Length: 112
Length: 112
Image (cartoon, rainbow over all chains, first blue to last red; front, side):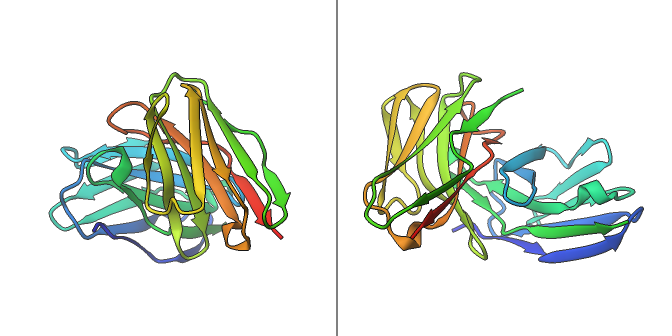
């Protein structure tokens, strides 16, 4: 059974810092991995999707990497801003739509 | 942009009531999903549907049923609400092969 872990559970950084969020998974046989952002009391917004054949994806200040063999993905946020404060979740697709496993998330606070 | 709309942001119901949660998507997606999200447990799949009138149980279907009479609409039904069904409910949709998941804003359900 796929298990997804996100460390740390919470992170507080000053504005302007570059930061890395971590996601690890136990079964390396995955189709893709997706990073989401969730604001308090809201739904999830997709940030980046990495296919199993890819090593990284970039969107603006965000860069996600994938190392299937070691079961790890990182989300790099450059020049953090207070508006980046949210919970970030990773989701691993291990075999079709019904086998998406979510991490519990990392709660990020960017202090002005 | 894909829009997934959940009919209620907040809902308060009494134990034993029949509860309907509605979800509508406007991008002609085949796949639709219902998740619940609880602190410390993350997102867990209740039911999903890959076509009209088709449904499959997820990880925690007990106490729930679903209906998909039209492609754009997926309803979650709590036949007899109980206090342990107090949770954030999230609807999502995707194209076949379950690539990018698009989520609604969520319904925070409280059962008293």
